[in-house]
Image (cartoon, rainbow, N blue to C red; front, side, top):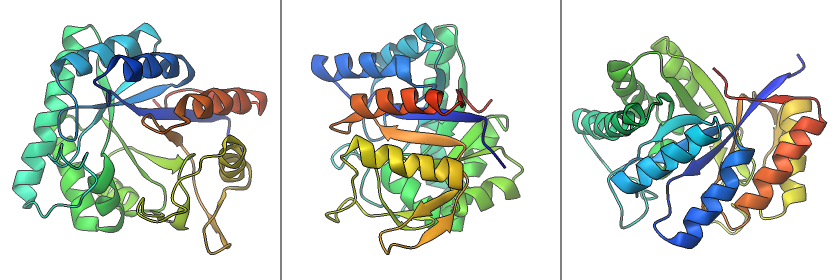
Length: 254
């Protein structure tokens, strides 16, 4: 089946300095969904309101980007958190972002976990289910962004929640349902040409090539560019232009 629509999302609200804020302001016009840090790994009231306002200014969908509460490690270290406590952590972060969005005349349309929480849930069904249950208790109409082929998809479907299968433009794949860990040398894609090549393969051939050289089936509903990546602005601009040239309508999945 040929894809006609694709979403381009970016993790934002992760800077607390003027240079970072300028970078995010430059990124926002090229994307269609923003996943906004809401205090777990980084972010505060000011950064949330600033990023939400910027998203609304450019008609970009507002998403919550909750994580383990771990600002020291930027949410990139797995933590052993009891299910009830994890649900409370997730709900608090989403609810705070929703309050700010409502106050600014907008709304939260989707939720995407950050960092270690995202990767843990991708391979661990119970963690994915705990996260999805927390989202459902807030608003079951919220769209879940989760790694394609992973336990995110299984858990969301079990709870009859909507899931957007996410693929990555700036990360390499270890297996069809896991990214190469950041600690490994070849985890990141730094060439925009390599990034475009990977994404076009996912869209047109519906396959992903893993580091073992083998190609596996994959669905692509939304493409992620990490906002804190060194080449994030170059990636989003090139990807947006390429997707349009390829005849796809770039828009939020809703």
